[in-house]
Image (cartoon, rainbow, N blue to C red; front, side, top):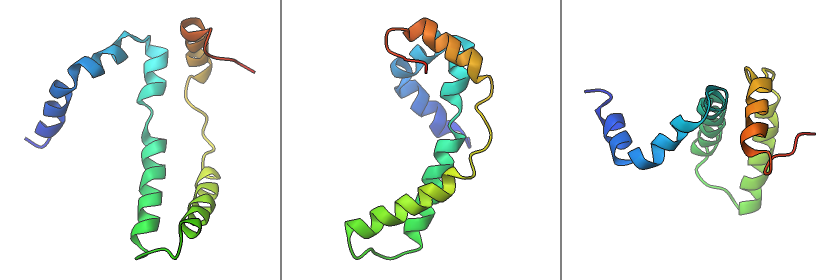
Length: 100
């Protein structure tokens, strides 16, 4: 019962979800790696929740800039199996990706 809403969400969005299963495993691993994104979102939410309001949009922008700079310093781990994924991306999307 705890995961019932997740199953319902998957069923409602099945036609948009299933194309991801067509990608090879190397690409799917990269797509499914969302922990870093979720961590950034949580950090920014926590930052804004602890403050009631901001004097201006510029103040919020500066706060986000500094927070993102600090958050990005924690990113030291490379994406697992990135070379294999990059090879698959190049094969699958060669006309839309440039590797430098």
